[in-house]
Image 1 (cartoon, rainbow, N blue to C red):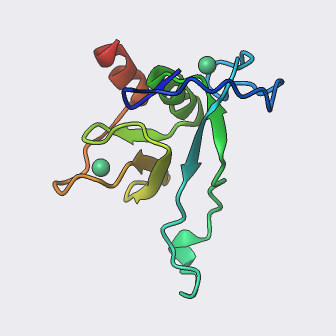
Image 2: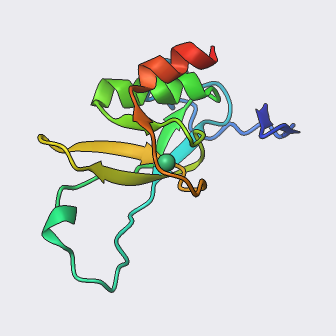
Image 3: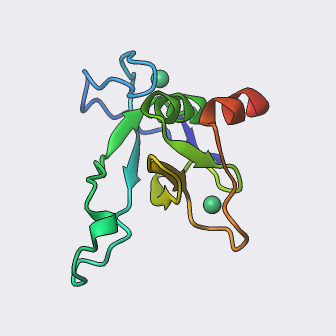
Length: 125
Ligand SMILES: [Zn+2]
Ligand SMILES: [Zn+2]
């Protein structure tokens, strides 16, 4: 398999029954694990805006960003198109009613651009 262009020849046989959260198929080999980072520092009191629970994962996928984007689309989560699908994603609550969750890698400095992940998957395929 390849991660970020680095070939990883190790065959890992743990989690033989792991299923991709995006497409529901069994993952052969090492799953791509993605965690949602809790943006609230543990020592800070939990604000009411942060009380909605975000399952931090990790979620397991085939090594294809499109499977992760499909999973986001199923959950109604938006994706910041200025970011990439990475192993750690940051949750951003969007100021809309009803509240929607967006995911971003948090590595860009300009404004977020949250879009429908299905549209991103179509663009990049
Ligand atoms: Zn999959
Ligand atoms: Zn962003």
